[in-house]
Length: 279
Ligand SMILES: Cc1cc2nc3c(=O)[nH]c(=O)nc-3n(C[C@H](O)[C@H](O)[C@H](O)COP(=O)(O)OP(=O)(O)OC[C@H]3O[C@@H](n4cnc5c(N)ncnc54)[C@H](O)[C@@H]3O)c2cc1C
Image (cartoon, rainbow, N blue to C red; front, side, top):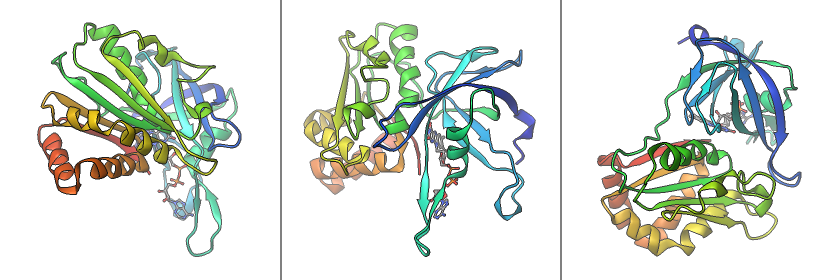
């Protein structure tokens, strides 16, 4: 289906690299839309349409990015996304190709016009019952939906009584998005009695954020397994596919394949499992 019907023109205001130069490049990109009727709720995704011509005569090239903005975005408000610059290696030729949309966004300069679509609905829903436990798992750009989610829980809903746990993996401490010396806005919630952020970094130069997450989950496996068996727990997963794979591997190791698969199925059947993952 054509995306043209709900296109919005945005101006790129700022583009800042969030990760060190020896890590995968992740940029915070700040956009502004000045249409009066425009409204993007925090935590949802936008689409980005890359200008053509496109390979194989395709009319459109469209990719999704989760809003990392903490607040809902109305006309004139700044809208924030975190974009990982992707490259893919051709298995036959061995050549490396840049991902089209991520490189387009990471190369775009302040003042550029970017065509957006959306908003596109997020699968992450805050449960109505404030005694629910929320288990949030993420790595890399997967931090984006949790910024708005945590604000919603502690600032809009308030008085949250269930346990809220954020497990986040990054290659190094410098790669901890929104939890580092320069930008530490998730620290706003550290004094909430129910909130705990558990950060884990990779071991060694060649580790990645998925491995780091797996280690963090394994180090806290018993608490996580107990939470998962509690019928009040909702599980959220965000980031690249390897986040889901890392969590799966860590839970299989902790609980055994059969018990973990049964628990996961129960969470899905009872609508207590939500994933926002991508390759
Ligand atoms: C709901 C949602 C939210 C998302 N949120 C974010 C976000 O917040 N931040 C973020 O960075 N990303 C996010 N993504 C991922 C994003 O939409 C893009 O998929 C990502 O940026 C890569 O797009 P690209 O155009 O750069 O790469 P593409 O050019 O589209 O390449 C993507 C795919 O094509 C394959 N491919 C391409 N070229 C080759 C080749 N030469 N050889 C082999 N395989 C190849 C790769 O396997 C890869 O799967 C999200 C995705 C979804 C669905």
